[in-house]
Image (cartoon, rainbow, N blue to C red; front, side, top):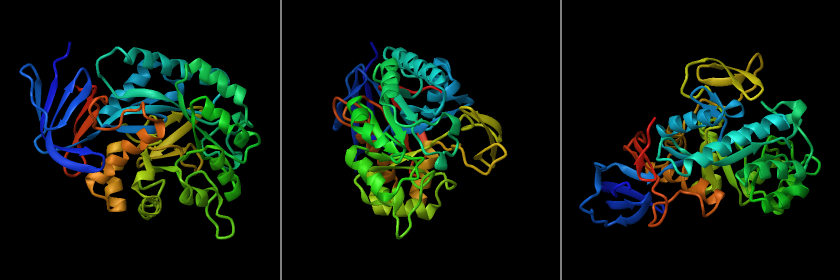
Length: 386
């Protein structure tokens, strides 16, 4: 059995406040926070005054380190998780781009294989917490990188087949509320344990609000791939800013102007914004040609576009870079921005998700220097290995 882990000289971020102290981890969980004593057999980690924050959670990513989620096997998904851990991520959802039913089921199977293996494995990379389906119930007008020929009208039976194959591991889904049959099936999606996000949408304000009233709780990559605000028709953007929903934000400086990020944080409040990467297999790799599901992608100066078309297709962002950008763009202190990368995503996923420094919680945390750079990442009280 792994020896307890005692962490001293840490500035511990807990519930939005920071206090210098120590903590103890036993059996992969936090057992004492702030004023812990070190058992005689404990491993000792001197944090040296670094900020100890909950591990980051990325709820929207299509790949990294040369691996595309839609094409990956379990080993490939594990490779993504190891790359993420080096950037402070301790848990993530794999985002399956709209694809054929057969390919979607294959990708679901790979994700479930890794999740089963990680239940008993020592920490290696970030834990795969479940699946995000991006489509297929999306608007062709704002399809972006979604293959238009595979988009569909609402079909709860299809989602139930996917969820049955996943053993309940589908945690979130992105839908367009104006697509026929979609808003009507939102309560059934919630009954399947799936948090509903709105995106890739040409919805009016009233259509968006009807979907939110039906149970939608999040906006996918806010302001991207959606009908934007007009004073006579606030559209989905207006609903995102005014309704009590979470808003994803891709803080790479490309998908959103820094001033737009600042506006979003000020309008929604930091507790309602969830930084995500929407990364593709090119994250961590040089410019060149890559894939995103069925699409060919060209990355130039770190910016991913559909090959031969001026359409942005995911990003090469990492969450630690998103943290530093968020601090700069929105003028947030490190401790406030770091909490957004864990606590907000955990609140969306529900009480079983890791995301806090509390006795009894899974001991997932990251040590950050004062500029937001990752020093070390720990998962279940074990140092993550790249």
